[in-house]
Image (cartoon, rainbow, N blue to C red; front, side, top):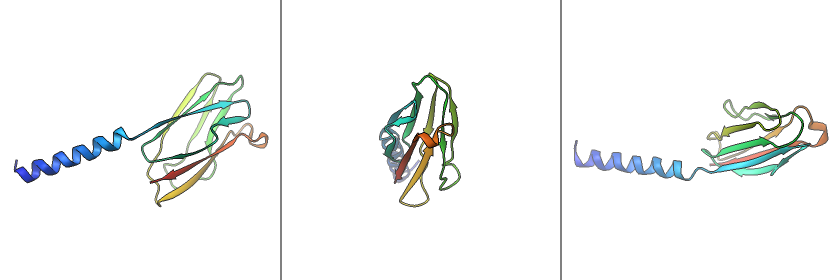
Length: 116
């Protein structure tokens, strides 16, 4: 393998390692009629971890899909969790709304601002 090929592969590996290392896990509590925090800013590769700490079933459901791959619908019984890895949006920034389909009229809603 030539020196330039080795350097190029090393640079690519370093870039991929940095991208993975910069991913963040954001914990969101799902409770009786709330998400905490409800509105968050995330980046591609971040993982959002929702946990139902309440006494009743809830869902975490995207309500305003921007593109395929940004859709999710997870029923959560008490004590259950759901992880979603943030995809790269088709534009520099997009806001995705989500809600509990059992309790939207009680204000159980949130938003994810996805920024590149």
